[in-house]
Image 1 (cartoon, rainbow, N blue to C red):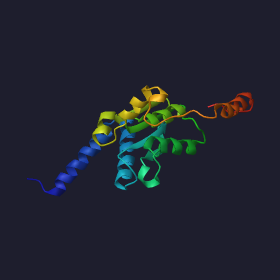
Image 2 (spheres, helix red, strand yellow):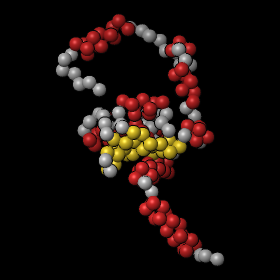
Image 3 (tube, rainbow, N blue to C red):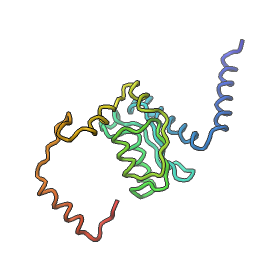
Image 4 (cartoon, one colour):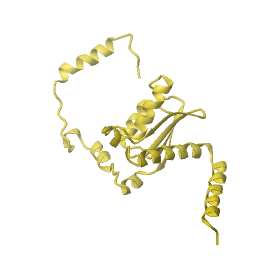
Length: 178
């Protein structure tokens, strides 16, 4: 009935119409999906992307780069937080919004809380990630266990020596709190 050129044009036309009907938040999420898709296709890591927005400007971008960097902490949110903080010259993202293609894992959630954005938008849920082979439910279960009952042994040693650093930190009147 229609040739491929007409069908391609109709798909493009639907995309343009959808783009103009999107909310501000949906447009930023679309950018996060784009960043994640590009990283995944470049074999940098898994299907995850993130952008950080201040006002109406993207100040940080990140895709999962675990494979490219051989670094298990190179998740999209962490990469985007590092990029945004570098770009604005601050270690906190107060007043910023984080758009991530999936509900953050426990590590990324910790990084997000330390960075202190005002809001987090996410697209997919933990269950979606688990269905794609990224199941972090075991980490949540581990966090609920007492430290002695975790799968990776955690052994407290040299606490008396190490607490000296905290005492020095507490006594330092010229420190920057974060």
